[in-house]
Length: 182
Length: 182
DNA sequence: ACCCATTATGCAACCAGTTGCAAAAATGCG
DNA sequence: CGCATTTTTGCAACTGGTTGCATAATGGGT
Image 1: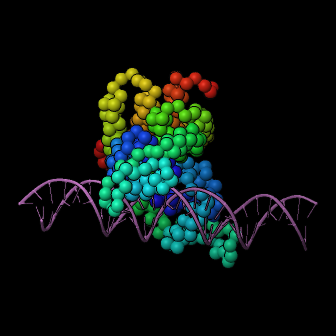
Image 2 (image 1 turned 120 degrees about the vertical axis):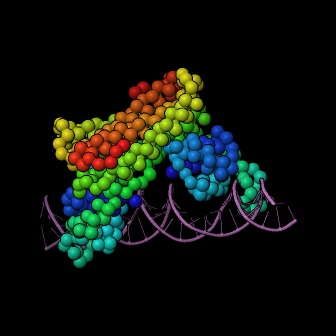
Image 3 (image 1 turned 90 degrees about the horizontal axis):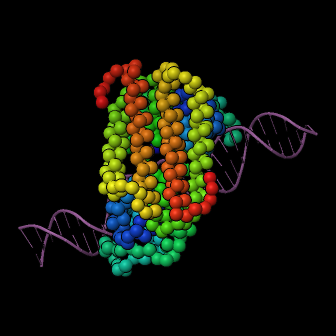
């Protein structure tokens, strides 16, 4: 439900083509609202149809680059959408189901999967910390910077939380059933 | 993708009807893998078709209660599924998009939405802490109990993380634009 | 000039989850 | 009993996201 507004936000920051956006999503907004290039192309088409954005070179056939930029109606729509309240997205992770299932059925060789997840979360955390060091070297800055840093720190908190959960899970699983190493 | 296995887990813990499961989901597995009753009915039908579960009274028409229980093939399937590795579910929350959008477009009256979310997360956290106090009164217990407690604590960590993020967001928003109270 | 890899856009089919509604059976009240 | 309410199961239509593939344009190497 938020993809159109994520795209409007990205295009507000800087105009670009579908692929530009797909790439930028991978390293900024996509960290908390991921989207494939297919989704992005489809949604850009809808946004253009709705008169919220406009493509620059008006291509005559497929394969030609189209640079989209936000129209006034698009900025209005985004401003209208920002303050809308909405339910929080609940925690939703298959690993929690696996842990509950293992609690019911007994040892089922879950450690490798946990180590895999642990490595992924540690890598993500390192990536976030690097962005933090590069883009937010020190004390606050202006409002916009502070908000962007806040979002990044929410991501850091999220990854750190998972790492703690996974480390404790390994301790529990290895208590009875000594096996693989870290 | 995990709903069938969440249902197998729930039915392994205790047999029950579709509505029973819908209600139990609301207060246990549903905390980290939510599902509507429609989803549950549809999936139970598929699981029965696949020979993993079986309904007790063999109803001759609609509206009659059906108690499902897990067959041996269902337990096997669940045991097979537990150790499968899978990518971590990324953080995905519209509020992060709203914060980024507000960083781009400037003040847009986000505080009420933040307060709404903050109240929701605080309530959820209180609910988790109550379950913790009731179901896990003290030191560990056996493996199964420890794992269930771990899952609950992951939920607590998640909610606490959101509360911290939201509180900081309010501080930033109120720095320039003094307005609503807590 | 030609070809191939890369860039860029897009279609179609599918799957999981959501929403609105319907209908049969069970329950309880007068 | 008869009737309304609740319980329980379910269908159908839709939406957002995923996957696999197709096709056009561009740019660099020879």
